[in-house]
Image 1 (cartoon, rainbow, N blue to C red):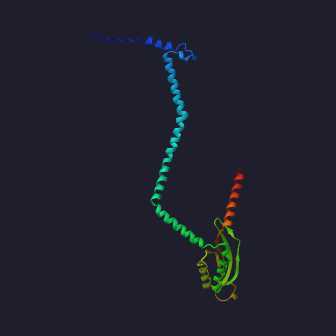
Image 2: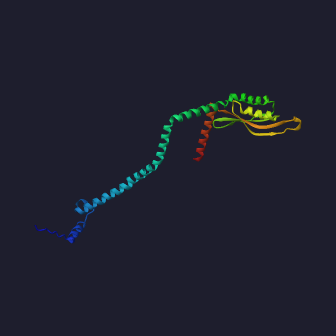
Length: 232
């Protein structure tokens, strides 16, 4: 069986291809030959893909990268929450212990109505040890976030051991009282043998009642509004 041979004239083929692109009317693309139509469709498809990439996929790529960057943080949060879930019962017990401790501390803070009795207890603690009060002056109440602080300037005279016992009695009061700026000196010679003078500031604390808390919140809110107004 004889083999058939095919002779391709590339020159004629090239002329045929070039001739299809001659004299194209851009206003009548539907009448173009096959090759120009195919090339036009290919260019349009490439442009659509490129524009779609930049307009749609590039934004999604950035979002995907942002979500990938969140992955380590989310894994850490998951591990923390898993640990808390495993130890939930123990955490509940600790929470109850903290609440009980806070309740005990709150009981050591007198209310506004109990302050007079507390001042009397401090005074009686000194008199009970045979000390002489030369100064017992409550100062200005300092209101903090959740409590109020009352400083009391005191000056007593007495023997060394009695002064020491007085400070211990103050520390052991059922309410919280602290001594600050303690200064012990020797009084004039005519005060008696072994007599010392102690100056200090006793600070006691009380919790804020509901009216004081509401007033404090209102003041904080007004201060925040005033600060925001200045920024504008």
